[in-house]
Length: 479
Image (cartoon, rainbow, N blue to C red; front, side, top):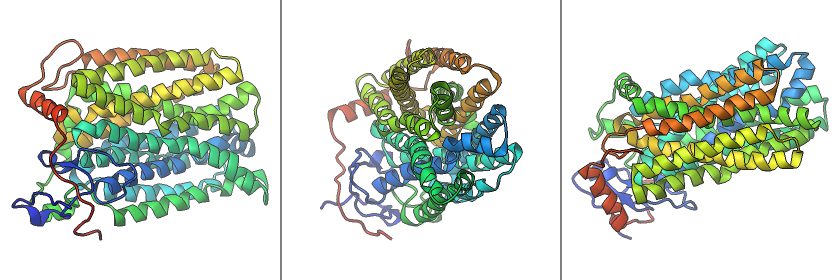
């Protein structure tokens, strides 16, 4: 077992060796991903990151597949249900703006655990709602848990080098998003029928959300104890030892918000993750009403959209990394634009499909394009402005929820869901064209520009050789 070159700041590194190859020029970030490895700090943080976001989805959309039962019990309208859907995604917009710069200042670990525990409380209380107003208010507070996406992406960006960060971010985000599909299936087709065995349908939906609430609270508490903020340790310890400067959250947010590329990615993420959130809320009701299915059957079919996260978002990030190795930033931009274009086309086809079997098939392709575009977007984010990555991640992530609010209003206000789908599809295609305007400093864009000497040198190094820092399998401190 070889040890890392310790250097004069050895005493400030929590671990003597790492279980993955790392790049000392990027703060000991991992230059490889070992999916079956759970060792600290890199891979432990990777698995904690995606699992926490997965659990956040379990909390966030626990009630979504049961909304037809809620509507019947409370005697509320379709518009009231869509109001609650919009509140569930609107609640996290401000939180994503806020948590981005806070990640730059405090790291992702403690923020992730704290938000998960807080969101678990209103999730457990959803069974107490008795009107459209209390339903909307409760789902608003549950929706704050969706802001864990910012920590998810910031955490993986903190642990992985730029050569593989697109894949790492996409896998963490995608496996987390998988919670949307699993929740549809587990809550609508497994737990709800199970709870109905011993109680009425009303009592079943009022009590079943206690399960995800307990899972969420325990997960939030646990990850604070078992993981690390970054490769060299926790932010608090690094600051106390003088190897990490204090960061101004306000300055970080200002730098991120003043970058034009941030807002282009904000719009594009609204047109991929915003679409996914909308489908998480709408798909079960859409299949139930359009094809006259039962609640359980509609929830099972709706879960397919989320299940594609098992590989699709990761594939988008992987393609982004591969094209980066061949063509630099221009390769990442091409991947993102093409996936957005295909996504928009699939939405328009889905809106015109009248056969259940064909509709499910198109849903699968549509979902793959949505999640691939999400992964490609966060393959670009770490390059926009490194010191303000947390703020930029938060702003772009807020774009997803903003898109969900906008598309949710379309479904709420328009009499035909097909019209809302058309608006969604053409908006996505329009967002794809914005890729031509993305121009990241020191990198080529789609229509011109030139890579800087430093970028060319780094690109050449990663293409020619594996990073030389050796990996070990033991740690100095696994406490």
